[in-house]
Length: 460
Image (cartoon, rainbow, N blue to C red; front, side, top):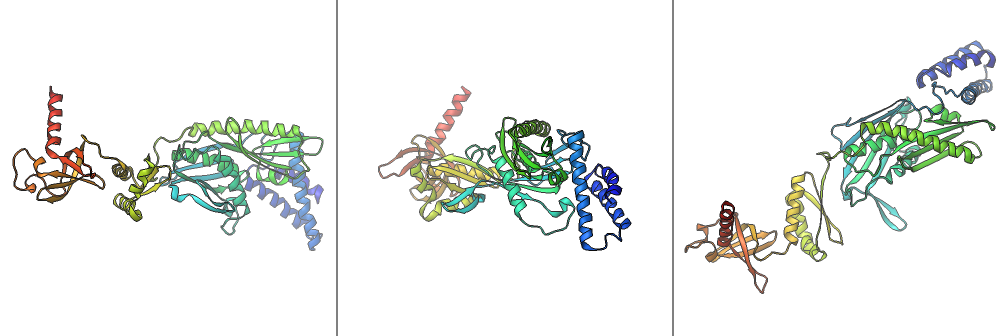
């Protein structure tokens, strides 16, 4: 059977394309099984028959690489499969990228969130929070199979490797206050889907506007050795992973390595092999980065309109109580009024999260108004809150009202306050003084005259 099958297997093993190659090998196997049906009548003989074909494939692949330097898809040992990169493939997401390398394809999506979206872990030392989250999904259809969808050891292991490889290049919270979630959907797989996740994740984060320190790319290296000879392979296929001696994943920037993982089926690798593998991986990584950089080499300047807007400001720590208010009344009212979420830190950092920039900025102005001390001599744009017989109470800053006496509303004598101002009206007022009891005395007249003087000064 071996002598009849070997020449045909040599042909079938070098058919281009994963599925075409698999179909060619299957056809040879089925043809031989039909020819020798009588000899393969029992289960034991059938097992030996299947093992024979596995052995021939193993031998043909390894011999070709060691003797001729030719791999099953026709590449040389250092050749990398064709790469294509696309960004913005999903219009509604905050950032997206499609990374394809040969028959391996990853769709990476980046979503930006707030501090309240951080992932919380229960740790022996207490709660731990992660602001960079990566999820890797490997559906069965990516390898032409049918199976259950769900998280398994592969998703956890590959996802963790990709996350660690990217995490070092994620900006700090001070530089970029968003929580970042990257989801990689493997649409097609023939080797190194975790490294495709690293490449796709980089592009999708840059597309989302994440100011990464440096772009990251990844490559899977392989090894074929018979003890006396060896060949290090760049960008291995699924068959080379299965029939080879090593799967060495290396990810990094143009300056260095950010993550790696090695699986070997032999006792170990020599320093010489390790040096060659790392050197070859660097050349491959730089090649991949050059292609990625042609698509996108810096973060998008404008963050998606669909992403939350974040505004950060610093206040005095003794003003935190005033911002929060009794029982959180003040801060809750601000959140409800402007449709935002406000987070305060013990060091006085206030972070405002809004669905749009206007809401976030309006809330920021309101926060400044609450924590700001009124300044004597300054003119404020106030709102008439209440009208009394002796004057009007005007709010000059959120939660801070002062009295504009009837005598300070007009130079002429007026009978009623309502002859000049109405409740809810916006008027300019000048803060004349803060008395010993902390009350604010305001003047409408002085504000108007100051405005007129300023206009005349500009004309002059």
